[in-house]
Length: 270
Image (cartoon, rainbow, N blue to C red):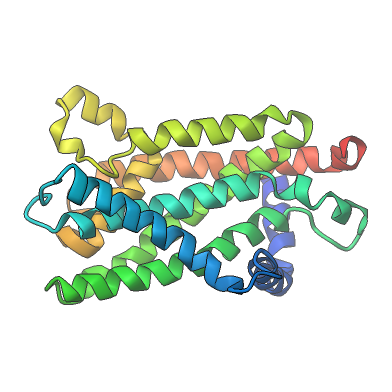
């Protein structure tokens, strides 16, 4: 009961500072590229170049065939763009407290806002690439329909998962710096274990079920089902949806409670 009360108070505190969080997210996005000639354009140039390189390697080099009769580049982008968002958010949010340790001395500042600020900052770039997928889908002959709106559900699902994970990792890394390296290593493994460049359908059933235990699988496939396959999340994957929200809910509550418990000790370590 005490943990739930702590969790509720923590969320109430953050909600009361929502306007400050939005302003800090805008400032964080701008300051990343302050002083460079292209400024914030670099935020869009880097991932765009990376996507083009991957497309060239897999489409031109390895001559990857269309997946389920859909153009490979479109199929690839609907998988890699949600992964970019997840990976960027988790890595930056994990180090958010250490990188802004000077704010611990400000009594009026709620340090729990920092992971949220990093996620919202990354959301600006992610929104741009969602728009690119919209445009590419239309250019490839897939006119928009109501399934496209489903991407906002999966985006919300990703943010809830990221909040729980980032509160957990950002608080633990203060006391154990190896957590930052561990997160980076886990993300490297998860990148190749998540069906971004390959389809889970090629695996035997017992291995495919193991892959589905990865919550990011739900998000990647969700983006594809929104833009390409045109499948509602409650039609075929209700058990997977239930599993995702049980895991995500547990991580969200755990992250908030752990963060709230460890927060009073941050200043003693940093």
